[in-house]
Image (cartoon, rainbow, N blue to C red):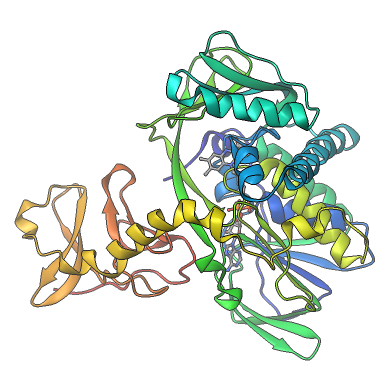
Length: 454
Ligand SMILES: Cc1cc2nc3c(=O)[nH]c(=O)nc-3n(C[C@H](O)[C@H](O)[C@H](O)COP(=O)(O)OP(=O)(O)OC[C@H]3O[C@@H](n4cnc5c(N)ncnc54)[C@H](O)[C@@H]3O)c2cc1C
């Protein structure tokens, strides 16, 4: 079970599933923070809104995050200035700063008890080789006229004050309750498996029923549809988080040169990320162009996407909610162009192309040539090998029993690999995740790994 601290410390809500055909104005696919924040923005609109999730609301990345609400998104501003320009960096900052303020005022206005607390968010390094990175960030913030502070404990650092932390699931569940009172409907265990366009509306297949709507929003974090080829413009990155029963200060920290992150929790405890973390994992999608895709799928359609938060989805889900709501209600939004889905940056994407190629090469080519004997397989481990000439994924459980699966990821037929740390199969090409017995945990795949008999 990949249960997070947030899931253990909040009361799960009981919800309905799709059991009949429905016709509505707006369907939001995905009940994570982006889908729910959008439902909240639309709750007072003249439109009837429903939110569908294939599992439970908030049960994927939004329920496994570290939930720092900050505009200090690692060293992204430096990359935006390098590959775009300072004006884009300014717009990106302003959009996220507004979102931070909006989250604060929603919590205040709705009196949401979600352990919200202001703190300072730092990025830092203790490696002399990375000091210039922090200096560059400092210069950018100065030119944006944003006040920064330092933490003398580290060789170089920048902090932004009046950032925040909260309990993401307490926040998300409260937003759902508020929306439900305004007539928004939420459906769990309601997976969208097919989308068809018919005249001016969309027809969705969900649990053997048909949902019809005029506006469709993909808030699924990573696309399960192939339309728009977003699976070539994004990749998913997996990260592990640990709960720690002690606290090292009230502020939040992120190291810029190593996998190290820290945020305090309310009861003298904290969450940390380091190289050996293992309590739970989550994936987020990384946009190759560096800036999330938030907007219309095609220029003249009522189909919208929200992808690519690159581990900064607390403020970006609010940015997306506001922007998509404005597009639907035909209101101007100053950030429409910045987040528009219709441009790409070759220079930015170079940063990730090698990594993507290496992963895809393993999934498409290298993993097809595995041929070790299953005799060397330990208990609670898995491997892909040839059995009777057929490539097979084999898992040995803790009692020593072998379980045989097809190694071909149903998404695009790449070959999966076993990850011993969390007992999962993962596809290197587009990062679908399956449990040790082949059950689907994370898309884009829509199906489990096929079981095989030996
Ligand atoms: C380890 C880690 C730490 C992070 N820490 C921070 C942080 O400190 N601060 C910060 O700002 N951001 C952080 N992030 C990023 C942030 O958590 C995410 O960007 C954000 O939660 C994504 O929200 P989402 O709604 O887009 O995705 P999700 O929460 O994953 O929601 C998508 C939903 O879509 C549903 N879905 C998918 N396909 C279908 C379908 N076909 N039909 C119906 N439903 C479907 C899924 O079930 C899921 O519930 C972190 C990310 C990770 C991985």
